[in-house]
Image 1 (cartoon, rainbow, N blue to C red):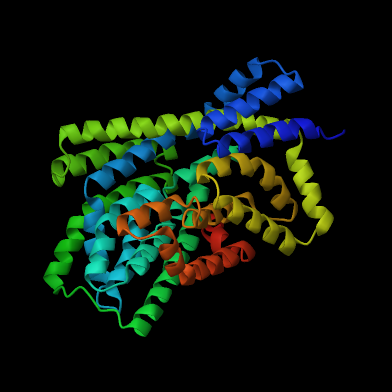
Image 2: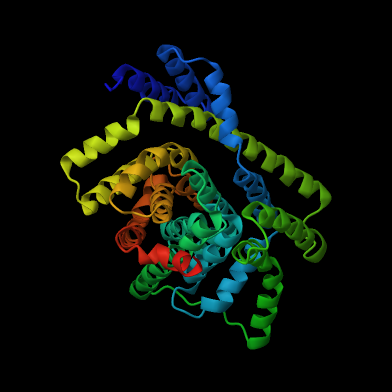
Length: 430
């Protein structure tokens, strides 16, 4: 069967052209798909069918709940309590405020599941606090932005749900388990970089709590952190599905922030619901239009074309994984993470499974790759948010991030070529 290069050009070229013109992603996906369907002579009803099929998943129902619980915990001031816990745990170490920043992101990642939410909430007071304590502005932004990538790896992660959907319905609980060790390894590598820089530049220690103060701070935060136990514990023990655990977590988070911490008023809750609905509308539109786009990619045999191109160079697994990683890193610098997961998973998953990579492991590889893209110019959203909070130029923040990029790439290399890093916990639970 011959390759329809005109159809491929219309689909991919139309999408990229509309993106360059700054047309919203959902419209870019939909319009390029519509033009291609007209060219191919397919019935327009295909668009409606594929859009509905894109949402026809019980797993997808977890997405709005995870968005909502993350917003509740962020607006409810849980991030402030996590920062204090982090200061208790590692504040006495050289460069303690930077170390605490990484630990806070580790804890917050288990609640929000979003790198951008991490930077916006924790960074809003930690970046200024680090600057007041003598840390360079670029360094303060770099620590906050790179540590926020743990949010897309440590469960719950909305991006893992997108990957599970795009990969044909992988078990969410298994994906969640696979993200723990890479996420913690990333945090540890960043803390090592922070410590080395602190020793070199003489960064101060922080946090001088006595036992009573430390226990009181920990006890206050545990109530909020129990949200993680509900989500992860419920899924792993089989008490809840991912969707059910997210729904229960929303109810618990509302109860904690409204009645226990008293940090949210009813007008604030209504504002959070409205904001979450807006976010969900955008996500839903992208998922629906990407389902049509993905169908056309498959129809035009784009995965086969790309696979043949890669395997024509070499069939060695080391090369295949290297080529896929480079592709993901480059695209991650240019496009939205969720969109890339939905579009690239059907294309790249068959390629990597041919060389023996488990779909669960590849999910973590892809998410980590694109997470690095969130920190990288020109379109790294987390970096843009961090630079805005730190009030420094993007270029200055990016220069300060060079040693942290190295740490993230090392973790990516290890996760790619040592399957046990991501697969040990899932294999233990099988």
